[in-house]
Image (tube, rainbow, N blue to C red; front, side, top):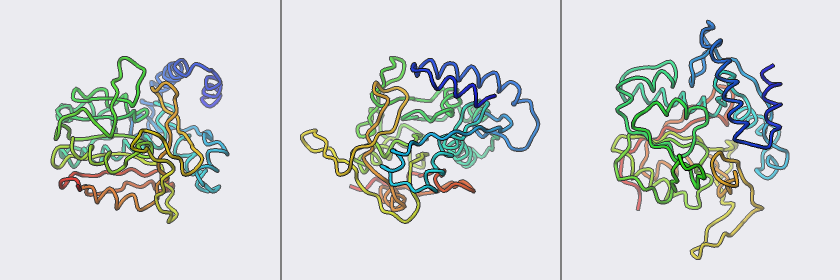
Length: 295
């Protein structure tokens, strides 16, 4: 039934309307699943974890991204397997799990899910930047008084614009910076990581996800931004969808490989990787600021 309803509304052309209807469906379902017993709970909303799945990667995108059949299946699960209570994808649930790990270390208190975590008075003293929407995790994060939420080129008047290459925030402003599948869309990875490092407090952390195929490949550049502002493409351009920008598409500048982890460490971060037990594409990075960014 859940899959049928979602399939129906996904056929609507009005993306904003689809999102509103889906949120109503999820809120109704959540009333029942939040009270249902069971050990397996959603790390975002805390409800009994009931999942539905649908493929989201087209054959054309999988081919352009150089995904084989196995990795296409991994990414379909990462993006298309959602909690029916809150709509959290596997990617969002992994981000929530990483956030709970970080919070336990930061304030010494454990939480069963992000929603209950965000209601805690100690957590509400933290300064958090959500640089782009972390999916269904965003609703829990909105409970934090110190949250600063932004999107790149947002056309929503209530959602400010922030560019990872030139953040408007003060140095050392945040305990935590969160972003989800964003780094592949910035034209200068080094500068973006240095900006995140700059706005974090000493000991603060970046929690993020990135689309990365862990089969031994190296990071490659798909495109670059020239000094005159023109784009140079090294491969046929591919795009990933977004929520608030006018075109709902972001150009992909990087195809990441496992060498990304060492690159992040080289920018002044101490790395921890939270891995999913069955899906190597569904991992989350916790990167703690430990030193000044590399010049």
